[in-house]
Image (cartoon, rainbow, N blue to C red; front, side):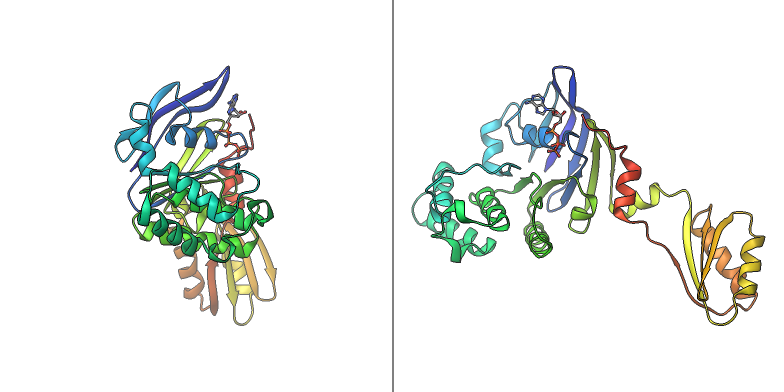
Length: 308
Ligand SMILES: Nc1ncnc2c1ncn2[C@@H]1O[C@H](COP(=O)(O)OP(=O)(O)OP(=O)(O)O)[C@@H](O)[C@H]1O
């Protein structure tokens, strides 16, 4: 449904996008993550027919954004990161303007504007001037504008930027319900944790290059060379400590209130073997788990923080 095929975009000597390829299947949400200046907006603008690639091609529902821009635009809703509006316009007028620009007429136009207002929760704001809207409401209006012609594909550039936690959760619910409805969504952010829960897959881009394309769980698995484990013990901890000290691949053992935290230079299989050894020695294990790597840690590991 959304595809970048070996896309490169140069601005002078800057490689804003450097041989990037990925595909987003119908009804799924793809998170496009990268630090500032990584190339997210440029690739999204290429898909949205607003920018031409120097090399490669971009496709929406199999149609080329380069060669078939008019047909692509009919299928696509684009939410830019910067929200342009006219002063003296209220929400209803704004949506009406974009409905007309998209060729909607008569009852169909009225029906779509109503649907968008209900779906984005803007109904009570219909008469409110855009200049008086909060950040969250402006983002909803901008999303509403992208949805007005009922596109099958949505490209959303940093829609969560500047939203408070509640507005971010509501945005997540909106995105998931659009995907459940069969829409295909590409959504960008420079914060992995902001998008992780609403995305089926994420692509991490830095300095124009796609460094990773995986599920969040897959990314976590791929980036791990060791496991940090916690074992909570009912009773004395001496036996457990002795066993851990005998394992060559265990290091950094720390004890706090019958809880031992340690690092294993191995994989899940090694994790299981250590638990077996503890149980064989009749250590009363109450709890045994991996310390989850935070998404921020993962983002820092995959990217080097290079800004161009
Ligand atoms: N029109 C342009 N002319 C010159 N350079 C540009 C232009 N558009 C983008 N660039 C450069 O291309 C690179 C990628 O920019 P882009 O806006 O795509 O990154 P981004 O990942 O969206 O960043 P951010 O998260 O800050 O919005 C940057 O170095 C930027 O300065």
